[in-house]
Image (cartoon, rainbow, N blue to C red):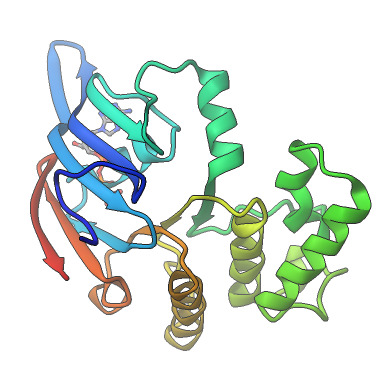
Length: 236
Ligand SMILES: Nc1ncnc2c1ncn2[C@@H]1O[C@H](COP(=O)(O)OP(=O)(O)OP(=O)(O)O)[C@@H](O)[C@H]1O
């Protein structure tokens, strides 16, 4: 089974159980997530869609360990991590999750190579080993001849390739992509999606938020959010 609201075992990367996130604004409460059950299997490729305010970012922030549930459980790699503190969550982010953002989020003062090496630096990798690995990753995304460039000297598509290489650097269990083609033209978007698809075919688990249905079509599962709930799931 590729995915389902229920499910357990080693083939599941991430699972939300009755996941609620309530924001309190004065006397008003907003259920950004209203009690969601969903499983993301290893090697699956998901697109999360839905209108503005439907809860997509909230769900990605929870899955990416950037925020905590108000109630319910978040099981990551078989472990309930709902109650972990900020340090433990940031350690999970560093070791197990790769992030790709619409605005690339590269460090402008650092070269392509140094940007890709950054998570390895935080993991304490030896300099030569991380330099070799960064060069291999740059080659995987077609940027082996841009290693010494700064982000400002790259096109948008090339910047997103650097971000993808950086997201892959630690060989994460999960890649989260937030509107990865939001700042790119249609041809470059296609190239970026083909690259992500290549990594999906190689076994990576990818969860992506997008507003664009032709981008969502690259995913094997499409999850539609509405008012903090899962409205429907399409795909095999
Ligand atoms: N920090 C916050 N404080 C209060 N309410 C919030 C907060 N973050 C989100 N919300 C509310 O939670 C609901 C879900 O927001 P969320 O950002 O998850 O939606 P979204 O689907 O990602 O929207 P968009 O497509 O516009 O990014 C919205 O009603 C929003 O106003």
